[in-house]
Image (cartoon, rainbow, N blue to C red; front, top):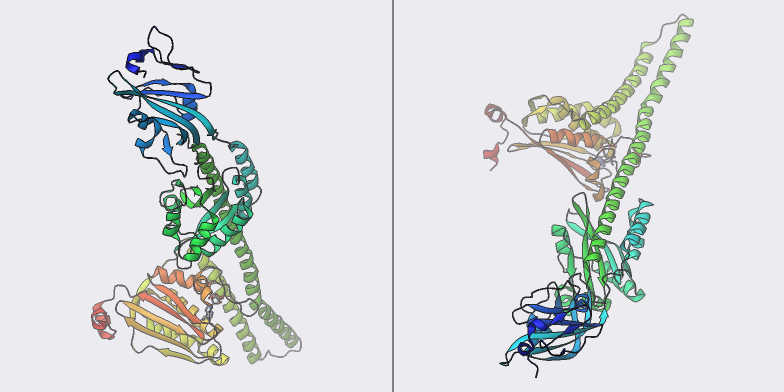
Length: 584
Ligand code: ADP
């Protein structure tokens, strides 16, 4: 047997195409290495004596001078299912441990993420005393996956063209995935984060694609019936928690068992088949809007660093596009709302103007005719006409006041002049103002306010709030009783306005407190959709809340809760309003 020590290690040379083991003056003792053969000779100390260029190409690393524990820097030996091999099982480690390794196939995960399949044989090289002094590893590439088949710049250019031509976000997302499938993997998903009905985080699959038609349908079915959960593997928790890239080498049977929500879910996961997955965040302006995921059914082909860079760049561009599309949608919605509001506002302002100008014209004519005939103008006729005029002028100025209030609120110029007031008296006063109109509409108006409820509020603004709620109750509940109740609950004053009118659909309950929002058709009811918005703004300026509960067709109850502010003790005692200690 040839012993390396006796051969003289210094005689081992490394060159591009050959590795020779010489015994000093004698002829080369190792055979010439074939062009395609990688040769590595490592001493027990870790010193690398031979590492030819073919070996460097096979392992995808520059020639190392020294290695630790038989590990080639940046490389990992893996099984053919992609799972890592224990380091002591690698051919080099085994040879260094004294065990020859016959020619067989081995998988190596290279630093750039690609995988090489190599035919390797390895043998220990022993010194004169029989101790292992070095290991000789020979490698032949059976199949080397090229570092990248990705034409990143072309794909990014195509993505740019695709995203640049439309602002209709969802329509562009599936074509975008077509750029990735099959160039990068067999499947791709685009998942967006949205907010659910109760403010929770919901993941929405905005687009999905699989190169295999059968699996495409299965994937759709799977995602529709079992929408992704941010906590399951596939890199999503990582992506959403930290905006980092997530990887899953393979969705193995253990994963399926761990994540399946029921037997049907497991069946679908199995039928879609094992895939490796790379998930990158859709990050724009500091937000993670979702994730772009590529699925690879060839789990032996790990995602490379260049592929990850490309996917990250594409995800970033997609996120910017989605963000811009959102801003565009919002701007368009704001313009639509403004146009709709202008239409409604013009209509609303015009409505009182018509009877107003008719009455004035009529009066004018009568005055002219009567004057020509030398007769007096009958005062009752004038008074009637002026009544109409005054009503319409009041209506007009109410509308204009609302518009002015909105611009004051938007500009942050809502000023409050606080004084001590009794909410029960304010409510009684407002109901009195509405009593004639209510009687005319056949609406019974009731007040339940057994004791004064004192607080510090702005009188005009408080009257405005109560007026808005009562006038809505009369408007949407005409002909049915309307009850206003006032009570104190410790430091809070509560006012409720209960009607038995048309009611409000559950979906509209929150929306109606927003600017310009209405939940009725303009053909049936007038209004600018501003009353409740202004009400809420005033109530919030008082530090309170306003809310509504309703059953469509049965009526609504609006609840106002206002902190009473700093009330002198004697007021509370004098008016017997239950204070915080009394109510406990
Ligand atoms: P508007 O002047 O249009 O009534 P508001 O802001 O006061 O505007 O109200 C917004 C919407 O809320 C209304 O268009 C109506 O759909 C709904 N609404 C308000 N109060 C009631 C109520 N008491 N009953 C039913 N619907 C109501």
